[in-house]
Length: 68
Length: 187
Image (cartoon, rainbow over the protein chains, first blue to last red):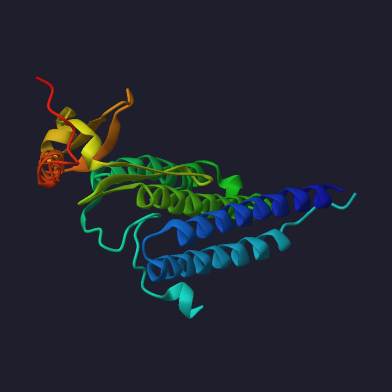
């Protein structure tokens, strides 16, 4: 039960971040002066975010949840 | 894809082919740095947690607290990165354009609120440059207000570099307009 709640919280946070990031990238590419600059920056941001997500995901999987 | 990446001929919606852009300006970089400084305070929380909390509470180095703390730090860093990107986007997408025909103000109030407003130079009534505060005087940035005919709301260039030069440019471009386009002088 605790694990389920933690999973819901964790993946809800990740979903929030993903949606927010997608909106940021969309706005940058839609309204930015330079598309190439927008692409490069978005790719760099995406790479960093995916790296962080991978780290967070592994850390979450390694959490010891109490057996109830 | 190639169409999407093609060099843009136009900087803002409604730009005419013969229109010459004289100035594209956005807020001074020091304004961005002020926002980044606030962001750095949140980064400092992470450093404080690492350097002061962990040595004082050794339990945080033991399982399961160490794993929980590690996860919290990673998620916190993700939010920090998103916040920094957001700060920069809002800085980058707020700009003003001065052309030989008009002034265009592109405003991104937040991620989902984009406004483009413009007016023809011939409607210019009064241009005021304003430098305020220690930072404004030291780094030479400030507001430029353009009063337009028939409107009570002033057009504002928010904390742009070299406000007096911007003011002069707008007045010079107004003077270059054909007499037929200028508003009649009020005696």
